[in-house]
Length: 341
Image 1 (cartoon, rainbow, N blue to C red):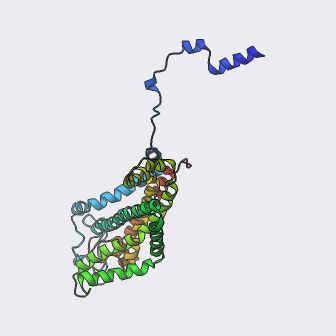
Image 2: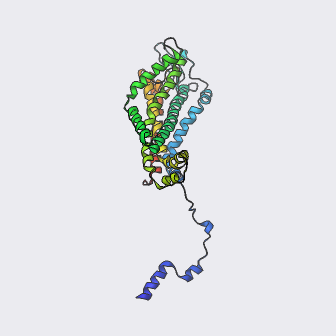
Image 3: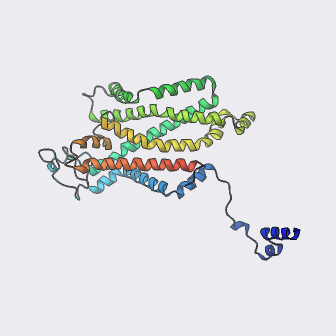
């Protein structure tokens, strides 16, 4: 039985003669086995995910529309503020359909070009959502890092502040803060210029959303840091006398890339919806700022006679938010090692 066992083992391993007969494998032609960080692995998975690529392309398309809005409006030959009263009948309805001069037609009642209003309307939504996402990420990550790592009385105070912020009535503040800022910096709305009121509303919206947005991310980062600070590499860094600043930003922060990226990808579409929703309710942006939310609010009375007036901004918001939500899901799956797509 022993010779048979030896022959079987040689057959599995390959006989010495076979090894000598086979050509030597060039080490340079082997598969690249260099170590990759979790972020590099996640990005590689995202590049292979068709849904993520398509959604990222859609988001890039809307960003390009916002950036090149003046160029697109100039290409059409219109602008978002000129009134074309000659194209409106006595009841306020447009007398022309979409044509070569007005690609999406004109706005009922005022006669402003809808295409120019559409491309310029992408700007405030993306600027507000992007600015609030950046501010809340910086504030939330910084406070979460400090509270989770330092602990003690600082952690208790920060935890209380987070619970307090999350318990506040967000909609009431969204209504009250713009009125307070208008009174402090602009004056009464009746005497202030329309552009000053629009600017005050714009910045107050960013302030309100940023004030309420950082708390949830800070709580998430704090919980992650509480588990990471007990790891061996943090204990070793403390023993070696590494400064706290380097421990926070060189040791802990790289291990928090996944939750931060996932939080950012999910927050951006939610802020776009919130901005459009508050503007629709009349507590967000105001004229003369071009906004999809303002267009939707004004189009309610004309959607039967002029469907494009309503459905173009509705579809734009829907497609943008859906693509960002699916992109956020793909990013979450890419950073999750237990997921295989």
